[in-house]
Length: 291
Image 1 (cartoon, helix red, strand yellow):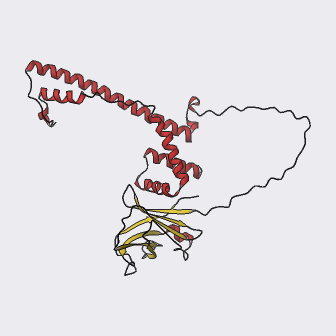
Image 2 (cartoon, one colour):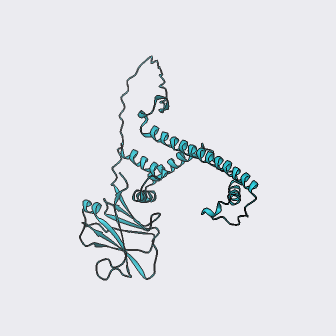
Image 3 (spheres, one colour):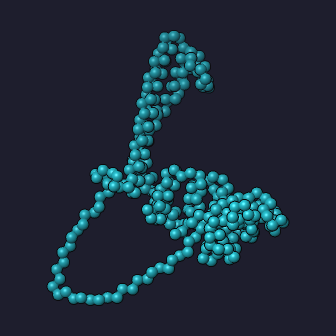
């Protein structure tokens, strides 16, 4: 599978909600820096969103719950652990028997409604599965469910006086772009506090402040630990604006940059007084964002 197909499948899983917390954090980071990945996510949201229109909503009748509460109160079942407000006193025995029969009838209707809801949900899940299989593994489907290739149209052209013309075709080959890497420093499971982007070709570091708290009496400082167990080295202070861009990695090899662990600590104004992190630290590692 090519890298483009792998990123397309990653976008589809993000829309379906099947990613774990770490993978979802990486996808959230890619959405902010990679327009191509964001376009794939929007494509899958439209494509899978259309499936919900094929399933009609099923809702229980409006007075159903009120009838259940009234029936349970009439049959004297509220004392078994189900706490219902304002339950009326039990009726006479004849009326209680009628109410109990009505409760049984309502329970049977509720079971049929739940069964129908389950079947509807399973049908929608099957539709999603068929769409994904048709997209990535069409050869495992029966012939009638595989995507049909358009018929080949044969065009016959009669040439009375063939003339052989030689043309020189010059194609411009685009220069390879250097890969970019991104790291997400999570504030919580839903949103990142900072996004770190590294351009290996220029050794440039860009830090974007996303959901981090801005404080007038504190500052944030960026650190890098080249190997586990080694004390981190300071890469400088993070500015108060939304973006901080500096050439902080000029003295490091690409292999060290991509394998290092990065940290952002909260320090007094002017930075750490000890040369090492003194406040709370968030850690992250780089993920390749472009081919």
